[in-house]
Image (tube, rainbow, N blue to C red; front, side, top):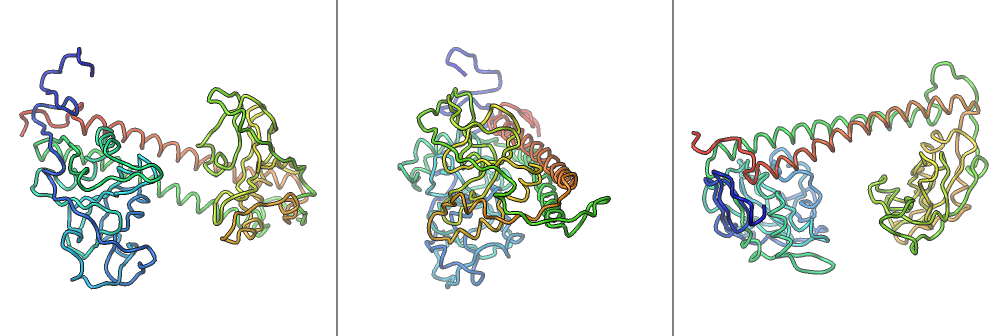
Length: 425
């Protein structure tokens, strides 16, 4: 809203935005007592002792809240005397825990709300900032969502410091301003809508995981010949990959990278992110024909990119970067993609210590067990491809609901859309 725009009836202007007249603005330091956690390294944690919240677990959590009783078996434990832990570091129901360090600005706003009505001993740990309510202004269920809007993240970004690691202090967390409905009913109504959306997203996540498990089982049966499709009885044979593909190396594109480039550069990040991290080139130094398999030859120790593959689905769209090779199959391309992608043979080259760099002879030396009948290869590939399509549609549906939830939060948590009108009881 610009300075020339009128403030809508029923709203007021504050230093951090326009909000409903019956909402309040407060500093987090006014609403919460702010303190730090109890420092212990990841190496000290086990499955023995008291529940311990490591800042890395907050970064990795998909939720912004944790039910301690429900999650108890999965929560890391610290074997220590509980009497040595300050009460300010013991997490109670409704406490909010922010990380104080992150590798990026977005991560600096990561937090988790504690659901712990049974008062199970739970220690807030390394690189955490604990917020304990001074009063009952904010309902616990509302806390699950109220720290997520853009205006909160922008304030945290403003106060965060650091280059390689972004950090925020307890003092600066206390300076963050938050606005909220004064009525408990409105807080609960907002949280209920967002909670229902979360439940829908989680149900889709579970269905996706189930479908992926089914596909993995099908791959183990169909790609090894343990289970044959109806109508196929022909022999299978073992071939070295070099016998059934033509091999070519990629080329460096660093001098041709532009945002308005015509061609997608297929590098390890593009493949490992399944096309989410994209760079563009104005030059196609190494064209990738349709149905070629692009294969990652280099990765850090214990990385997940080595031998990860991408099946080219379109002509004149992709160009192959260095340390990626192109495999042009002489058999069904989709079938071979499923056989080669992250094949255990290639994973054995990763010693977990130094970077893995596969050579051409390493790539082509993999033994592949295949049906002699190309129609059986095609039938197997079609079944697995249909499973992938079903999973992809579910993921798109989930992602759509995630975006919907983000939009709803921006509207509901800033009062632009009201679920309880001013004056309602």
